[in-house]
Length: 402
Picture (cartoon, one colour):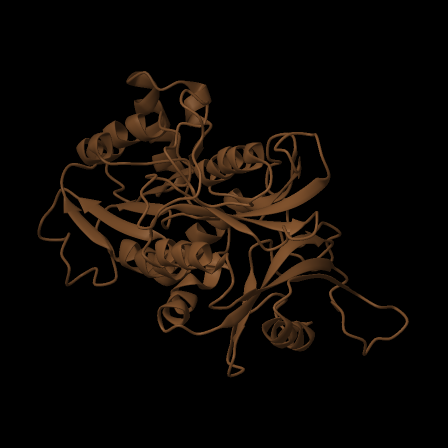
């Protein structure tokens, strides 16, 4: 549900009752991933989507029913060969959907409201909810935040010296005390990885007791896109980066070009030597670095640094001749062949792009393909999956997606 947190946060602040249908697990060619949500309030207003349109009507009615009877429900939707007009996913996939009422009297409402508030404000947080298990636990929630800050009292805390060092979490499942500790620690691991998915665990917080399934939704700040080189191609890439929900920074050492007037959609404009800025700024495993400076005095020190950072993507603009010359210069300053293998250069996919906008689309397509494991090849006539699985989470977790 955190993918529609901004609107749901307003609903919660207004005191509205609502029900949320959240995709818990998917199979086959399902259009949405775990965490996708549709919400319906008491007046029948709906926001969000769980299937791109295939089963929205049926899920809408489940939400209305959950608001009336106050009971969560787990429902599976899939394609029906026997009746093409039956409720189902015509794409051939299968989705499990958890429908949870969020009403004023519900014990999980303060936890859900806090999670929505955190996600809407851009604070990293993970919300864990029981999907299936012993009666009374389904729909219960627990919240972990990256900074361990709470604006309301928490219900539990691990014992002194526990491996999970957070001082507290909000909410809980009210069953075995070990369950809250274990789920909080697992939720922190999901949050650190920026992942949403499910985990199987015993009701005592280990493999003991009745098994239950917990959905963990992570909400993290937007990933960073840093564009080096304040040129026309960069202006187009900034627009595409914002469309893809990146926090976009433009960096150039030339103040006459790095201006807000030239890049009105950028979140941040930095006038500084690119390699010096990269040395001091924060990056992580989701950050993408696009080097469009096309000038050796900028490119070489910048790429020398960039190729040694644990970022998601490093691409550099230039002709094939420029690429070969740049590689030679990088080797001369100590960049290894293994490090050079990380460099996407010439930047972008082969779309035949010529204009800045087409080139930006080419770069963005390569970034998405790299992130999702796509080949960049045409889907027409291909027999490969349309949706690619992301890397598997640690053992014991299933259905995890980036």
